[in-house]
Length: 452
Image 1 (cartoon, rainbow, N blue to C red):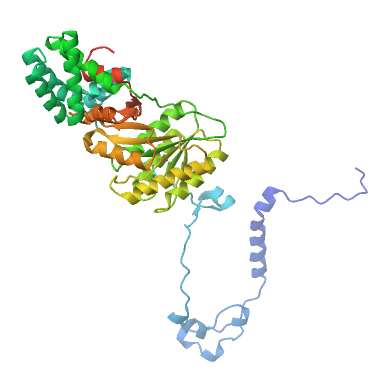
Image 2 (image 1 turned 180 degrees about the horizontal axis):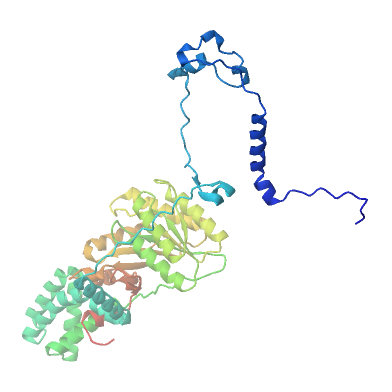
């Protein structure tokens, strides 16, 4: 750099700017020292100072006068002071220290609520043992064959009139008139019916004479064969046919409380397990509980579900349901009808109307009309078969609750008096407790044979 050029002014550094307030303070002290002192007369006391000699220029220089000092400040009226606005948000939590002044305030973050602590349920030893026992029974039940379950569920019937017949035959060891009369009384008391009881005893005596059968065990074996002949006849198993574009319609009828809705659900599960597309139609529009129960079965089985408003015409619902089934390529349609007393003629006529609507939408339908009967109702079931068969063409019978009666003879009577096949029997609440009726298997289980 040449000597002719003037040096550039030096910029103040960080420390110069930081301590510049020292220089400013020294400059202010120097300026005040150069101000001449005021010519103020000396007075012995403050009270001797005259009021008129106080200079009025002091307020102009930024000082308050004596009157302004002595005058108290007037507080504003309470009514004019606006109340502070209510605070709706949390006061921000400010940081303290140099970093707080540098970064300012931050909003307070509310602490997360504590996680609920689950209640610890203490399981007693008795409860644990009960759970293990229930698991063991469930495993044993799953490992049992259908015949074992059937024999176990028919123990009430087997221990009822079958045991009575065995006792009557065992007293004499032969079929004389007195033993035959006792057998008729036992059968009538077991809901077999007088006509069927007389017919069974006559067949038993004729075969015993022709074959020369004697002894309690031989007579009981012959009695089992006679009952098997009564069960055997018009046989039909439950096998819905899947025709493309034509749903297989099954209408389920019966009185109240026989288990129609549960039977429909179990049959729907069986069809779903076979790979068929199923639709359930809640034709019982007068009972909300039946509609809800059938809807639950539809959810369990993955079936389509059709319902209508309470009290609607079931025929209209069936008409819409069958048209929807055709459009959706449904394989099997179950129509659950309203439970009705077989003594009400108007209700039975309405049942016939539902059948005619089915035939109008899908020709030759319903393809099956199953009548559900309760085995515990006794001879009343015979009247139900007669009247329902007159209203609609019943193609099969479903006998439920065979595990809940010690009589069990109503199945013998119905098979003897009506040429309607017993399609299904129910011996429990489980889905697998509804099976096809096998006469020989049923008779062997009824007599308690160890193996099938």
